[in-house]
Image (cartoon, rainbow, N blue to C red; front, top):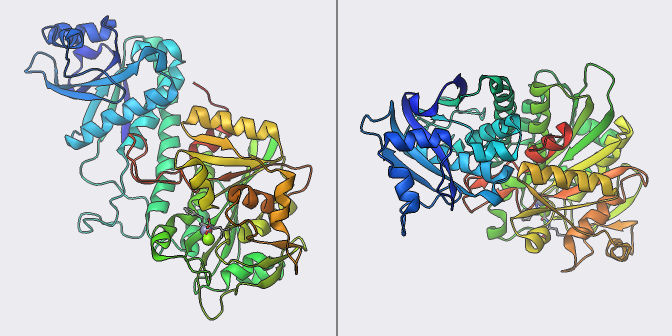
Amino acid sequence: MRFEVISGQLAQVSGEVLVLGLLQGTQSLEASAQAVDAALGNYISQCLKAENPVFKAKLGETLTLPTYGKLPAGHVVLLGLGKAEDLKATQWRRAVAAAVRTCKKLKVKQLTMGLPEPVVQGMEVQAASRLLAEGAVLGQYDFTLRKNLKKNSDENGELASNGAADLEVLTVVEPQPDRLEAIQQGLRVGQLVAEHTNLARHWVNDSANYVTPAFLKQQAESIPGLQCEVLDFERIKALGMGAFQLVAQGSEQPPYLIHLCYKPSGAPTKKVALVGKGITFDSGGLSLKPAASMELMKMDMAGAAAVIATLKAVAVLKDLNIEVHGFIPTCENMPSGNASKPGDIVTAMNGKTIEVNNTDAEGRLILCDALTYAQQQVDPDELVDLATLTGACVVALGKVAAGIMGSNDSLIQGLRAAGEQAGEKLWELPLYEEYRAFLKSDVADLINSGAKGQAGSSAGGMFLQEFVDKKRAWAHLDIAGPAWTTSDVAEVPKGGTGFGVRTLLYYLYGWTA
Ligand code: BES
Ligand code: MG
Ligand code: ZN
């Protein structure tokens, strides 16, 4: 999708579809809507006044009207913005996504819209434009890469077009010329944020026979503007990453520890290290998952996808005075003759021994060594890991929110606030001292799965904390719930959600509405 900005009046623009955002529960139309309404013989205002209207302007509701030549545009899509008092970043982004999805169903190639005044009253023009582009590009997404393969020439797993029904041009019309530049800038940023969210979605949606550790490595290595160093299995073993090694050894696919780095042109204000769980398939290992729980385990690399896509976005966006590192331990968790056995005891890179009583608690085993390595390599001011770590987190928070845990309140609150702006929810879970009992092993320093049916997400967080320096600002995001969705929200279609990309980018860049 391409964005285009023109100066003019909405009602006077020709094009396939004109999208008109309207508030619920108000009958006074803003100037640009009035002009469209007048041309359509006051149909819109009558409709909003009616006792039982066919269009109520609820958030994301759309109604498609033909213009019968009364306007230069072929059709008008009325778009509900919901109630004025609820109209914030999330609602505006969602409304635009809904409009784009309606247009996609209609196989429209071009649409025209403005920034509705009620939106611009509540936020800056640049933010409103950024959200518009985010909504449009997020709403456009679906995973069709491996469908209709004849039409889809690009079979190698690269980000492919989403098929023939895609919107090609979104034209933003703005009557005030002094706003054009801010709109351009907002659109550019929003488009990049959403395209990289879609990239993460794409990797999560694609199947584990394509998205292997080698695939992630190749994706990371091919990002222009980033340094990339990859440790292979030999190096992983040589560095003493016994926990990571144990998980990786059960698979035919070679594991990697990927290290990506963005360095700003000037002196960095701080160093942030992001660590993403990259289990490209989680069978559970010898502690095998039942079939129904295994079905979706291609999504167990969603943390890795979020970290790689975020770094890729930073490399394109630039304008960031923060040094950002990405660490991605990636392997499969498989049962085999060489797989780890329940009861195995290993020594992690930091010297702690771990009794692996459950090979399905593998995420913490690959992450703990990656956390040690990340701190050793870059001594980051802030350390953030993202992982589809526990089913318990899905039980606690559903698919609505990620669990966030950590040692530093300002980092946690900063990430939560960024998530709020980004449209991703993070809810804090405790790391109470009492939970340390769950880590107790009779035969090693730690056990990897000691909590049976109690505070499983916190137990995962407690385990990881054992590998983080006491003074380090660290946050752990358990994204097991929101990384994959079966409900269909306009800007978050079914499947992989790309959760984390927006929160991390909003956090790093400090964007607000
Ligand atoms: N990848 C799973 C967690 C998961 C579950 C992610 C559902 C997404 C949806 C993780 O490796 C796992 O298997 N965790 C175990 C931990 C337990 C053995 C301590 C779990 O949640 O059962
Ligand atoms: Mg597991
Ligand atoms: Zn897992």
